[in-house]
Image (cartoon, rainbow, N blue to C red; front, side, top):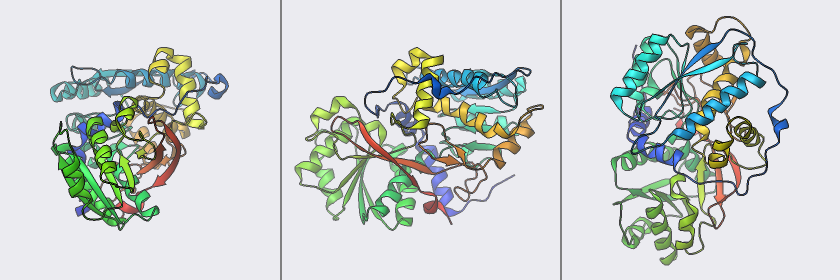
Length: 422
């Protein structure tokens, strides 16, 4: 069956394919921690409620670790979430769940093997955190009638294939969030400095331009080659059109260079960056550090936030080593989110066999499900979040402003859904 797409949705889907590498970097390379973490309160876990039914195996495909990526923490947080679900939420439909894990190393051939393993094992659903090889997984899984549920789907098959769903909008959430925020703040024109690689240029030109245009905000983009030492010419060109906001989409070196150049040229407008830009080491190389820079994110890692406190408590109880290393890493949330999000979707199924049909029905009918570590964001996988891209379940984002050392201050949720409506 073919899903017809609007012109906007075609541009978004194409951009999502190109941006998967950048999305993975943004999710797993960031250090947007929320300051000193409080000691977790075990009471946040709630009363014990053990699953007592027959064991249920759930498919879980993750990219794992290779010479270029390391998604180990995502799997660890997913496994911690499984133990929490089994011991405190009564499992899924009363069944204690376990993960049928297969790692792809972001290799398409291996990803296809993983998908075939899930079909062979007869799992009722395949969960995913975030992957670069969705096109090798989704067709195999969905053709077998097995629902595919990702926390952050980034590739076109994950967003357009019937039977595939993404709890968050990933890149659409990030760019849409900044577009909605710009409109809210009265910004009239944004100048984008984009790392000169297809993953960034094509994605910003498709998703970004569509969202900013719908928000009534002008957008121009100037590419910058990786490794460029002096960004003054590019920043001068980008700001020559009297932009009142600057968005930098690149690695930490490009971000630091762009912010330094903007300051030297006297730019006093708003400054936006992507999450992978931010690291505390580069704060000293930027005059004034990261102070006042805005980031659009999916997770709210505020120590006082209820969802974050639960996440921290789960990790400290069931995976303390992971908690010590990753509790303030926004990328590690993806695995935990995939498992807990699925459990919340299934909360209305209290007993009986958990089949692909039962899971698919629960996914498409669950409304306003609380997004794990989402700071109040919710998702509904009814195909309405972005017309033409039925797999996207939400396009909400969290906007935060950074302190001098790159630490987020407070988070504010923002809904970008209107920017993707027909």
